[in-house]
Length: 144
Image (tube, helix red, strand yellow):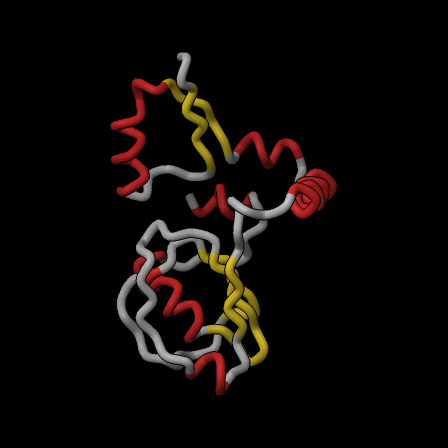
């Protein structure tokens, strides 16, 4: 997994378990910016580890919709929490986002981040997701 993430551009890697345990309201500053797709305790830790003036974009709830934290990162470090909406976003905003990706993301990188599987594999895919064995996107083909 480390080689795969490094091939996508990661310069440093951390174990996701280090963000899943409840931490203090202000932890050591690590991140200038965060994109969080997990939510819950992971999001709370990301907020508390973001540097002064940094921003955290929350775009998913894989770990839960709860957020047990304080306002300290926001008040003392001026950390912004931004919600990313992929459901109600207007078409023009979506088109700009897709155009930005098309301009900056190399096609060969996309191919390493996705795969297609038949609907019959959904139960085992779900288990793999829960166990952290899936990387990137899996498109489930309903007709296959």
